[in-house]
Image (cartoon, rainbow, N blue to C red; front, side, top):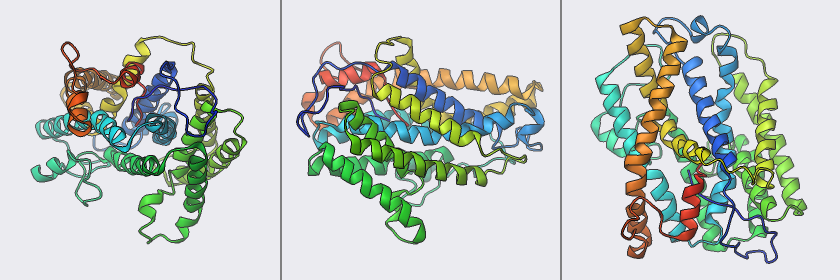
Length: 396
């Protein structure tokens, strides 16, 4: 949920800012879109009853056992977020960081909430769903703030739970910015956070659990360490911290697999293998192994990820089941059709909501000097932000 570009220059001063010219990591856009599609595959192929009567494996006997591992998309989103959010904040003030995050998150969120509420009202479905009824109008408005979960209000779509995790991570990064962001402090925070994540499960009722996020802390910390390695691959403390994060996350993902109840046996071994592959791919990206790949269409693909994620589940369920009732088409065909419709919707949200509104949200928080000039509506005005926007490096 952030846009950013990267600095591969090794750190000569612990908090030295990087140069203005930074490569765009287009491959990271592809990785993000793959994660979003994987999550959608899990939701459409395994976590609901497509016709209200039969489990997904009834319609997708061969695909369902594969799509089940799409739940890992969320874990990988958090891994990417640790990498990109720290990079986005590096060298910025707290105010500039907050303005950048708000401009990136809220315009698409507003559109996603309203579209989801509208489609769910026009195409209501019941039974066999992993989510409750659509919240009342007042609660829909609360969802526009991204604070429905901490305010204990129902979510318009259950996938929004990840937004509150991201929001808390942003607060942690903002606190680091306020204290003064350096590589040493990032390592210390990462080590302390990871230690707390391993200890807090013993205290399930502690309020601190809301900050620690024990199940997902290893991914955020691992992503942050990869950014440190991007700046200085000789940082052996970062390598050690990354290795510990990987080991802890393997334990967590095994527990996640054990909690799955799709109606068929789920093999445990593919999940840690896939997660390890994700660690490896992001590490290759972080160390510059894909810097020369500059396919611009990947930037567009990356821009679709966040709005697609926001609208895919509840809207997708309504589209698939309504079309199934009306046409009787095979469920796999309907799933593919729904994904195409949702990707188109995501593109419209990006073009008609995110790009026009983001500069004004940023200006509201960062000050009037960040307002776009003539001919620049819908574009970032800070040269560093402009490069970030073009790269499309946004996380979920």
